[in-house]
Structure formats: structure tokens, C-alpha cells
Length: 249
Image (cartoon, rainbow, N blue to C red; front, side):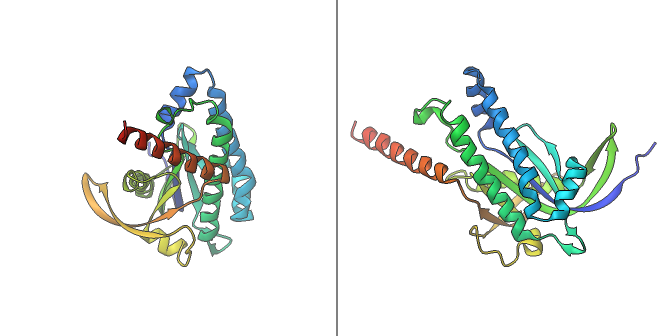
């Protein structure tokens, strides 16, 4: 018997934590996976408190049916699905970017407080890249029930996922942390005119239908917390010292 599907247009935001496997392995060795779970709880709490800043209507949707917005937890991140239209008006893209930025800063500050002190302090033992990366696209999804749970299927989910991977790939030689890769189609619709977060055009290759296709995208550089910025500067200085010692060794 065919399961009935309902077409819905959604803004799809997929994000996860860089180096999560290495971080979790280190925490397990120290018997401190509680710190990881605490951060996940704090991100969940962030959703409840901050999503109303995008729209009170979106806040109501979240409270009536959390899975309709914070659709799926992936182990080290989330799939967020926001309606592209709220109260007859297009979703405010600038507020969405600010929400993503605050989420980045919240994660960064909590990581510095909860997890970094537990990890070994040597430069070599801390992952090179720590932070969140995002992939964003929009389009029509099919809403259906699978095993009594509402699920969504559609190409837009696949594209957002592949854009997130491109955020990691494009910036792997610098720092992919807190980068958001957004399809140009999506950026033009929701984020046009937003100059904050250094929007930068890219052409990326995305695999669709077993073939790689060139895809126009815009990257946005989200912000670290103040404590995260201080730690990054400290690590740069430590790396410089190690390199200098190696050259003169």
C-alpha cells in the first residue's frame, strides 16, 4: 500500500561538528562523554530559546511539533527544516543567518568551557579543526510517515548535505569551522542584500544522478565566541613556536 505524500517547501539547514569522532574518542578514553552530552543538551536548549527571534510563528511550530523544525539529530549535528513562508511572508533570511551565527558562537563558547579543558593540552592532541559547518538549500520535499514517524524526502536534502561537505572541502587548507555553504539560488531568494559574514561566491562540484555537476554557491563565515578567538590565537602562537623550534633544531 502506498504511503500518501504531502509536498511542502522548506529551507533545509544541515550542520554538524568537525572532528567529532576524534573528540568523542578522546572523551571516552577519559570517561567524560558527559561533557559531549551536556553540549548537545545546551544546543537543544538554544533552539527553544532563540528560534523565536526568527519568527514567533516558527517558535509556535517548534513547540507544537519539535520534529517539524529540528527534524533529525544525526549524532553530531541536526537537520533543520524551516517553512519558506510564514504568515504569508517569505522567511526572513537575515534572521536565519543571525540564528546560525548565534548557534556557532554558542557551540564555540560551550566547547571551550566544557570540552577543551578535558582534552590533552598539547597542540598535537587537539584536532586541527573544531567547530560547526553548514549546508543550506531550499525546495519542495515530500512529507510522509515511515514507521509512524513523519519523514521528509527530496533532492533539496541531498543538495544541502553535499553543500555542507563542500564547506569542509573548500576550506580544508585554511579552516572550515563555522563556514556555511549556501546554494546561490537559496542565497538569492533568502539572503540577498546580507553583506555581513563575508558572502563569497564559489563554483562547487556536486554529485547528482551519479554525475558531478557544477553548482553555484555562496559561502558565509560565521563567528567564533570571544573565548574561541582567544584560543585560536593562542594555538597559532604555539604552532609558530613549534615551527621555529623545528627549523632551528
